[in-house]
Image (cartoon, rainbow, N blue to C red; front, top):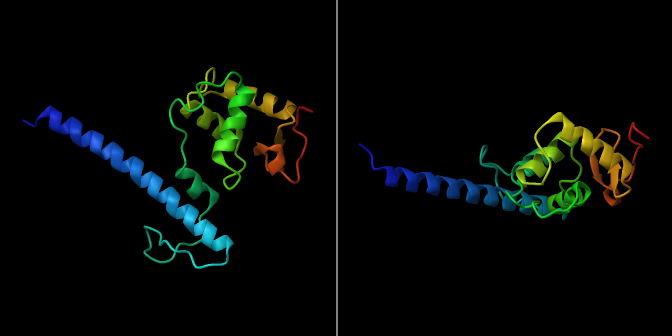
Length: 156
């Protein structure tokens, strides 16, 4: 019979390795993005191909960046939490769908936000009526300063 303490230790180590791999992937993607924007060759190969990295999609970059539990727990309002989420996310990753915003706020322990459609509706109403946020034509939202070609949300 296996020692449960050893199993717990191994589970802990696996969690730490996964966290570090995620951070490493984020750093590599950032390095490649900076190099690409500077017109340089991308310095880091992708793990899957072993070749120079192709242009990573925003989705690939977003996978590497997940809010920490408790990150938005101290926010007083949903609007404050949404601003903090976008600032944390950064302009490089930019706009998100309402569902992705909700999921990020839930992961970051934003008070009063649950993984349900009511939260998406509240975010839609909030972001549509707050001048700090902008809506793109594809329905995604970002901070107003990041959005060049904004549209009025359907509720206006």
